[in-house]
Length: 323
Ligand SMILES: NC(=O)c1ccc[n+]([C@@H]2O[C@H](COP(=O)([O-])OP(=O)(O)OC[C@H]3O[C@@H](n4cnc5c(N)ncnc54)[C@H](OP(=O)(O)O)[C@@H]3O)[C@@H](O)[C@H]2O)c1
Image 1 (cartoon, rainbow, N blue to C red):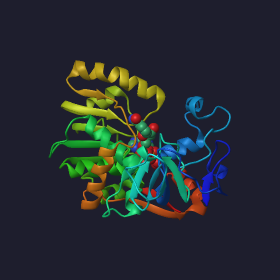
Image 2 (image 1 turned 120 degrees about the vertical axis):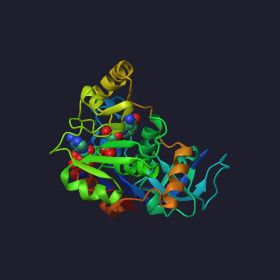
Image 3 (image 1 turned 90 degrees about the vertical axis):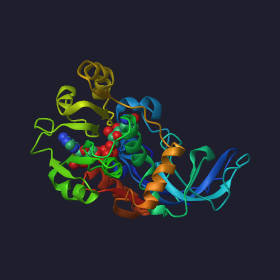
Image 4 (image 1 turned 135 degrees about the horizontal axis):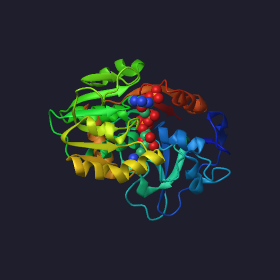
């Protein structure tokens, strides 16, 4: 079978499609036939080995893990001893961020506990868009407390992998959504359902008269104080981006500034691959409450090209890789 592998950190050129042995599941494991996978910013970070400090865990000189890809949807092909939750043929999906990566392959061997049943009314290519970035958006929004109908929600950096989910999830809750990104992404953001779109190169949304009840900050491009300025009384701000310095500042100082000025500001504790999140996303994808946003589809052999497109910033929605 084929798997996308890399021997060193670097851009898409380090990737190659290798012939590898068909995996055999061990105790508590399953082998999944991958029907669709999608790329996330996390995959690019994994490929490049960034931030560098993360290499303490992933391999200082070379990546310990040669495999790539976190988001997958597929069918269980075989299960190992002790696995009772799944049987061959079951439809499943997963975010392999903390389960060994390796979604870019014909098959992947994973701990069965990393898998979630995928309902039959969610096609594989639809499901594969969502486990990582969809769950990030879901958890970020949940962390600010329930978003109520009519609340004004700002999504800063709405045009990447996570933003389209955040925009649609906020809309599904009845919010009035302002989406900020580069000017050439604004038509895309309007199509997603944003009520108002703002080009960050022309306007600093924190400076005008607008006030927001909720700010979901994916781009992390503004200071804590300017973000505080655009919050309505009782407003809630959550940082999604994980740039180390800024994350530490907003995690530590956010609650202080917020506490002193009557708002909530901070970060949230992300947990990848939580079953309840995937169940909620599946229901939304099946009902149309969240539309899958697919930019392009690539065969497995062109995975490097798929990564180049992700790195270029040109994608409008998720990039699918279809083994
Ligand atoms: N909090 C956690 O626990 C946790 C866990 C996992 C991941 N993360 C973080 O989640 C983030 C992933 O988000 P993502 O995949 O959606 O990132 P992304 O695809 O890079 O999207 C960010 C978007 O913001 C846009 N942008 C750039 N500068 C901007 C500005 N000044 N104002 C407004 N928008 C701007 C980008 O446009 P261009 O592409 O044109 O630059 C892009 O469309 C990463 O930072 C990752 O570290 C957080």
